Length: 220
Image (cartoon, rainbow, N blue to C red; front, side, top):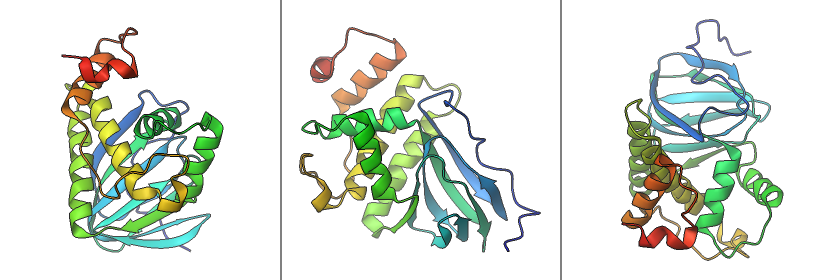
């Protein structure tokens, strides 16, 4: 039995639905996190330390350099074996599905089948030990999203950074055999085009309904 009597407070309380499409923060976790479930997809990168994550999936040990992904509804807690530092991100399932469609426009899956496919890729909880160059790229995306989640930053900027991160995670998560009928994508994270980033920021900041996906590359 894992003793969580001295565990740190949970990173976020579960909520249905979340207040925003995405939430992100940088955390230091000296002892651990008590079991909590979220209605969102959860992702975090281990910046330093070693921890045991426990839940219905059993116990998994993660360490600095790992990327960890969790499905909605998975209840899990952690025990820090050494002081842990992470950057976390919570994504509304509907937001993830829409961004995956944008990154793979040839997909003809409906929302339910696409959600089921993503959930199977993650398998409840999935940890991935990244090569140093891939980890540096993913960490940069998490850091940009965390910085964009500060109260004074416009929501549009946060949405643009979240899109970058989701597309990057999608490239890492999808094995080549799972890309059909998706477009073939690179296996390393890539930055979102600057014009698309500006368009996303404008679209969400101004709550515009006139912009279409086809217009994204033409927004000044």
